[in-house]
Image 1 (cartoon, rainbow, N blue to C red):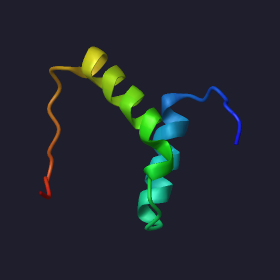
Image 2: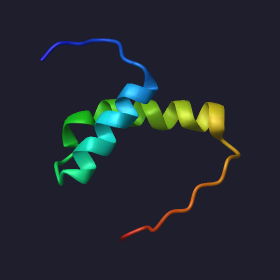
Image 3: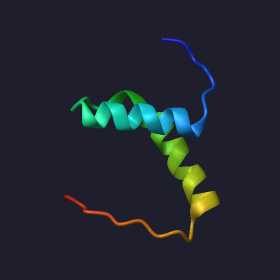
Length: 54
C-alpha cells in the first residue's frame, strides 16, 4: 500500500463503490476522520438526513 493524493470526489466515489458492494471501509479510518474534519470546517452548517443505528 502506498500513499497518494486524490480528490475528495475520487474518495467519495471509492467509498460509495465499497459500500454498495458490501465491502468494509475499515481500511479508510484515518481518511474518514480527515474527511469528517474537512466537512466540519467547510460544511459545518449544512444539513444531512441520517438514519443512526445504535
